[in-house]
Amino acid sequence: MRRLTRFRGEDRGSMTVLSLYFLAGILAVSAFAVDFAYLLAARNQLQVAADAAGHAALYYRERNGADASKLKAIEVASYSMPQSSYGTVLRADDIQFGHWSYANRTFTVDESSLEAVRVRPGRSEARGNPVTAYLFRIMDRKLWDLTAQAVFVTFDPHCLREGFVAEGVVDIQSNNGYEKGFCVHSNDHVSVNSNNTFEAGTVVSMPDSTEIDLPRSGFATNEGLKAALRNGYYRLRVLNQLEQMHEDLYWASGRFLPSYIESAVPVIYTGKKIDGSALVEGRVHRVSCSGNSLTVEPGTRVSKVVIVTDCAVKFGNGVVLEDSVIFSRSEDIKSITAVEGLQIGKDDNCAEGGGAQIITYGGMDVPAAMEFYGGKVIARKDVQFAANAGGIEGASIISGGVISGTSNMQMGFCGTGMEDPFSVPYFRLAY
Image 1 (cartoon, rainbow, N blue to C red):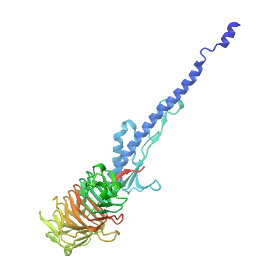
Image 2: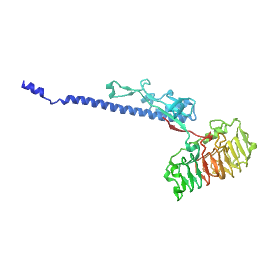
Image 3: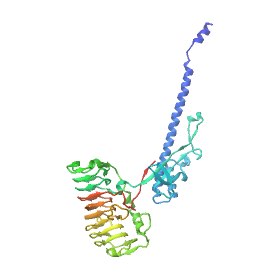
Image 4: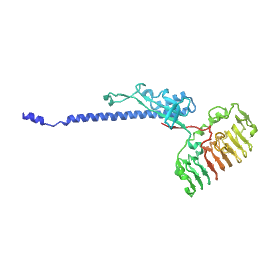
């Protein structure tokens, strides 16, 4: 009896049972942690594939049809998640083109759209490629379905709509005014002289804003400049599209052709000088001058016309470009020049219509009185100009070299009325 009494009171080893319960709990939590991390990694892998495929689809859609773009997206997704290892994670019907609403955060399907794409890859039992968990199988959850989603949209960067953007230095002199919304950007650095005024909302950007070149007086004589500074870099995609622009304009067909061109039959012109009497509205004019220059006679109003030439172009005094494009294949550093008083675009207080563009493989030099009214210049080389005071109201200059502007200019901002058939889309992740 004494032995039974001692045995009944014995508590050695009693923690063993409790420890077993603790061990089971720890194993269950560990199973959850391990498998949760594994499932999260698999989900992140799907998201990376969705992002890459979305960007590829929209980028490829710029020049190709919807079906070809979907195939390209599937190809890109398979680089990170090959079918041999992950099954079919992305199918053509997982990719939809359409429109994205930032306000409502909704996607509307439109297979003809070039504006946005939604990509939704997945791994599931229905697809035959579910994600296999390991320790969750003790909870009878061996297979898991995972999906991801990416929405990519096109956009037109603010600085490339209105402002001065250069691969090299942007050199702005003294006594200039920059209105709200105007942008000055360099992929190198911006150089600023004294007594400039930058309204609130103006942007002055470069990869490292601390490298801005200032006069000895610094920010003290450039009101608003310090607040306008930003860090940034733009890949100038438009400069890589000049050959395609030339092709579309030369053959009067393609997405870069302005809407006011009504006939694909070109006007062939062989003279060295051209005026209003030689121009036919609604037509593309091909001008070849065998290495000589083409002079646009003083006072000529160029309206609803495209001129495509391999010549350097010289504008006489008082030439006005409205609803027109001048494209020069000349690679001369001064392939576009003007005597005085060149007006690019219609002076219409930023109304719709009237915009004009000058595009060149070379550079541009206008030493006096250039005016912009919804005008655009795209040049592979340097752009140097002097503007009338107050003669800029909606301007875009994009240069693969240096942009140099003179003093006493007022840089107005339109925001609307900047017709631009030569914008090249950029891409960003919206959702």
